[in-house]
Image (cartoon, rainbow, N blue to C red):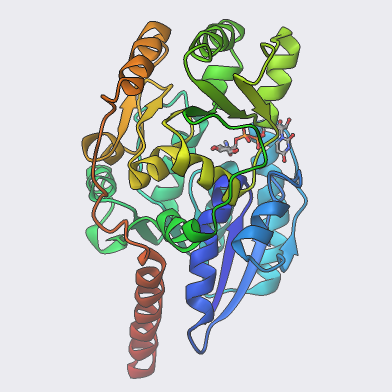
Length: 366
Ligand code: UD1
């Protein structure tokens, strides 16, 4: 069986890594890794390949940045050529980035079987580009692999037949479980208590007023608790445009984007997380670290119902008071969701190999 994996942006890399490793242990499987190049900076891409032990991509499309339409269309054009040449039995797409939906659409039109890893997540907020990518990808994919049962419910509600849906658990947690022992703090001047902050959603950073208000709240919070802030390239550009300056001293440390092992170590050792990332809501739930999410909604509701996550929205007073609560030792505690156990990728591999065996049996009986 020939599997072609499509990745493009930072959050895809920790999802593909365990699936590649799990397939590599099985016989009769050939794998091709295709990187669209949606993320291309060394610290947004190469370092993850190195730290996660992902082999060099067999195909690199080199797409780069652009408007959503440009980026999606360019991935589609180049991916179509690559997939026609390679003729895989299955294409695996990951998460909700532009590269995911572009590859799924090409496969659906060419009638190449496509499986979506991390299917069924819904924020019910169509202002988020990722929500549109999720909706379209899930309508097109032949096999929908969900990380939690809310994903199954969302898909069934959208009319997707139950036989296309399988709850396999969270592949990103497979990577976390494997690499937690190797997590290493970056060489920075850390205090005993600190908050890890990440921000990159267009709704937070592309709106000047919103970015100014968040920045002002972070500067205030850094008076009570050191802030460690690895800055996404999109956010760095927006902050420079607005002339937002770092306060002096080491209370608010702005860093370049970090590698996986450094980011994991900071999550493990911090007092709290403030973020608008999807993956970090999940990782902090697994690690039991209170997470304050600067969004009005989340496509990962189990991180709230079972985990340590809390939605703050855009209310910066609420952020200040919730940070104070955590610092007083009253942060939210939680438990690990079902099937977030380090074995999701093994379940995916078993499922795909069984599905393929069944098809083979039907073909030879016919
Ligand atoms: C993308 C994903 C988002 C994911 C995020 C993680 C979509 C729609 N969004 O958002 O779901 O959470 O990745 O980072 O696919 N840039 C660089 N170097 C890079 C990549 C980007 O400088 O290696 C800059 C460019 O100026 C670019 C901007 O960052 O225009 C945004 O990049 P883009 O890939 O469009 O979206 P992200 O905000 O990274």
